[in-house]
Length: 160
Image (tube, helix red, strand yellow):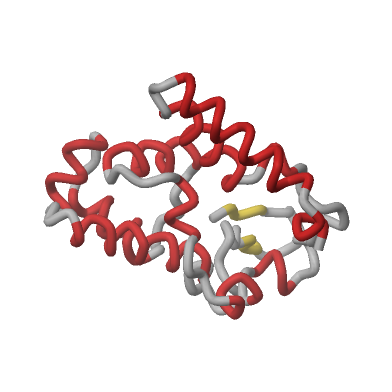
């Protein structure tokens, strides 16, 4: 919270929204991400204390992340994905449309949907396919899978 003073005016307060809604509640996306952290942690049978230890945090900090009270930064999200053994995208999976639409940036018109379709080489599906392909140990099988993919990609059904 910043207090600015002017000689002729009363002190005024400017409160940083820090991604919160107009009512001061946490950003719904942060709440969703926190719920996904809690879901994965509980599915693994891990306590908040154990997760905190693995991340170098207190269990109270983990609680705040799980409630959405504290925002999860990019590096912390990466650490969470490693400790909880899930891809970073897991934390955004199953997010209802209404949650994204309730984000303050969306409401203010700041967040704009990209007009161009994403590069297929940057899609998660493409990356997973490439990783799976290179996990095939036998080079002959890998070559056959490559050939099959080429034939299927060139088929008339692939274009529709």
